[in-house]
Each structure stands twice: as structure tokens, then as C-alpha cells.
Image (cartoon, rainbow, N blue to C red):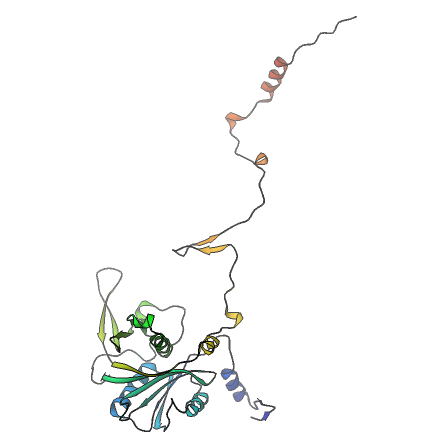
Length: 307
């Protein structure tokens, strides 16, 4: 593809479709994640990356080779791979003496690191250890966040936002009841973050609504919060800006109550009640003959006199 004046011009139809897919859209593509491991990793980190990749498939790219980089010090390699694989989310695993069993969750904006949070693995149970039936690939999970820290602490709020972006999957208008098979539960308690993965089982209950049971299927993590790299308020606001075409225009004189009922208000001109057409009953109708006789009786008789 030749490049002139900073604009890449495609030569073939295939390259044209490729650039159109990478270009800006009103509705974004599904957010893909790239999963990488650093220069030094442990068995725990390697297995954790594989299990998270299994939950994230098919919207993920797994790099098997080691990448000698430090995201909190140099972010150029992450930005390069992000642009190459068209991924706006990343997960980086590393291990060293100072920070053992380390995972870094992060997001990109315009192929630059927006924010990332470092979590340390204290306890881990893989999919192999919990030998239960798993969900099909590509299942959209239910996300549950429990704990006051997710509502009060700024770092935990940003962590909840990153985890929601990472695991939520494609945006769909509706989901059938039988499609709710996977549940991810995050709990913030006493400075730790507990991640549990459950399979939703629908049992017979004797009525139309099924009885729901949760069966742990793995992986399960006990995290501790370590370093953070958060975007400034201005950059964070810019990243959340939506195009005008997607903004819902507010309709005048239309509102909804607490139950979702649509209410409308009509503006009319002042009505003249004297000309209001009411229902006429037969008993109230006046007869023509009766009105004439009444007029004759009430009117005085005037006699003419000759002077």
C-alpha cells in the first residue's frame, strides 16, 4: 500500500476492506484482548494466563513468546502489539522476587495506554484442578461486583471498569434465559479481591421459573492490589466521549414514570365552552309547536282604536 502525504492508499480490495475495518465507526467492534507474558514467569502465571484466555476466547490473542518489557516503565512495545493485532485490552503476566505472580490488566485508547492496574496472585485454582463441566466457548458472562470498595475507592472503581470491559464480551440487545450459563463474581474485602467463576444450572422447580444453582468451575483467584497507572480526568472524559449521531435526542413533552409507562403532554388552544357540543337526549329536546303556543300566550294583545 503506497503512502502519500501521510495517507495510506490501498491497492487491492482486500487491503481496502482491512483499512475500513480498522477505521473509525459509530459502533465499535468487539473489544479484543491480547494476553502476553514477560521475560520471567512462573507456572502459576502461565497457567493463569491460559485459563483467562480460555474464558475470553474467541475475542483474544495469546502471545506464546516471552516479551522482555516493563509496562509501568516503557509502554512502547504494548502500544506496538496493540496496533498490530487491533486489541484495545491487554493482560500482561510476570514474576520476580519483588513482585511474585504478577498480572497487569489494562486498556488502550487510540493505541496508547489509558490505564492499567497491577494485581498479585496470592491463591489460585486452575480449570484443571476444579474438574467440573465448563461453559461453551464465547459464552457471555454475568458480572457481579460485591463490596463497598467498588463504590467508594477511586482505584477500585477504575478496576471495576477495567474488569467489566475485559470480561463483558459482545454487546447484544437481549439474552435468552438458557443462555445465562456463566457467572463471574468479584468481591472486594479487607484489601483483597476475590474472583470466582461459576456455572449457572437451571433446575426444575415445579413452576414456570426454574430454580437456579451455582457450581464453581474455575478459575478462582485471590488478588492483592499493587501498582496503578490511572488516566487523568480530562483524558478519561475524552475516551468516554460519544459521537453526536449516537446520542439519543430528548423528545419534548414525553416522560416515563417509575414503572416504565410512557406519558405524553399535549398543548391545545383555549377551548370555548359555549360552543361545546354535548350529547342531546330526547327528553330534553324542545318541540316546535309547544314553543309557538308559549310565545302566543305570553305576548300581550294590542287592540287598535280609531281616533
